[in-house]
Image 1 (cartoon, rainbow over the protein chains, first blue to last red):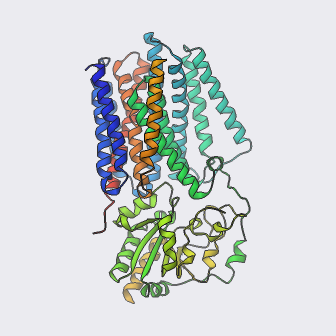
Image 2 (cartoon, each protein chain N blue to C red):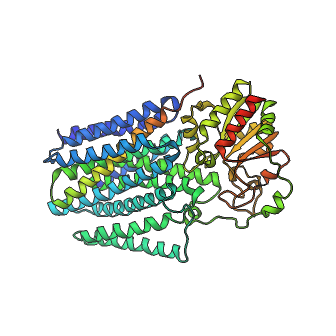
Image 3 (cartoon, rainbow over the protein chains, first blue to last red):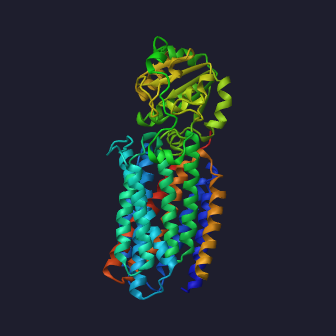
Length: 462
Length: 93
């Protein structure tokens, strides 16, 4: 196949990637979009296999078989609640592949006596740096989400200084590669230092900040592919990588805005604003009303409009199917049920939507924060399950708490709020929530799934 | 230099296309967007295939093979899991 034809095929693949992402603009067209993306990938791979420089196919075939088997196994076995870990792992493999491809291509050029341009050396250094940070950062994110290691923020004295120093060492090694292109050791040294850096920049990020870091690593995996595209002078790598890079950056911006935090503070593992608000005792003392399943059922019995607000706790309790059953039961009694989803609910962007979709909740019932906030005032009852900081009214206060200024779901404006929670323990921000002590709030203590099931049987008996 | 300017042009334009397309994806589909775009970033596979297939040195072959495995996990795992997820989004009947 001539080079011209190969490049035309790559162009077709790039167009299919763009159309594929465009298809994700609506749930109706999304499945077709994803298939178009996969088709683009297939075309790109097939024409690459026809390249004249390939002398044997055994190694390629072996790699593709192993990778496909592992990938398919992961994709088909993974639980929807574990999707954040899965995406973290996939990000990592993408970054790792870029490191290896750039390294191999660099050696090939040196070995084959090809032209060593500044573009080649700079791009190789960039691939090694971004790819290694992505690979190790993603492994740490995976370990945290999978609870192999503690999900807490790990910070130590001088961490920022050390990170800055390692960053400088990477730049210096990169410069070394550009100046003395024959020094392949410098590339692997760069990869090693960047690996340490990848671990260090991810360990300070704690639990609820995970959505930001996963989105950011997603972006990095794309940028690593782009850098490798510059190494290989390959347009389809550059285009596909840029699309993914843009996607990850947009998502991490959305997540940061939804938490009213800067990217820098999330990555440093520090919460802004300081202070912890009023103490838990002074807020909760004598004001918290604990309700039984029967009492909560009575509230739902007279409701006409209900909104469910799910949080990460729903995923932990695997309560999404029980919540769906509750919603169907209420619907059958003429209650209008919608779901209000905060952008950072869960451990990755859109996590709650996927869990509810898995439980067969129709997507047109899922409302964004912007859509849901105006309707709370007309809502008879809001059921908060496993969410805490995203419904904490202190966020509306201008300063003085770690979540001040964060946009929240205004559930306290509803007639009655029912909160399903194990205890009054604080959320990720570590502050008390006055919503739990509000006059119109009923606390329904217990495990998310068990509580919803109890509520369902109480409703059926009444 | 000419080559560089050409690929740089492609890069800059692709970033703009990316921003335009991605900002239109609704929050409800953000998880499938991440896994799907992730699969697309597995495009590094084509570079991996070339390194694994040219068999220039033992080192490049080993690097190429490992990269093919990584990238294929990315591509196959990404597209499949996205397909599985998207199949769950359905309209109220």
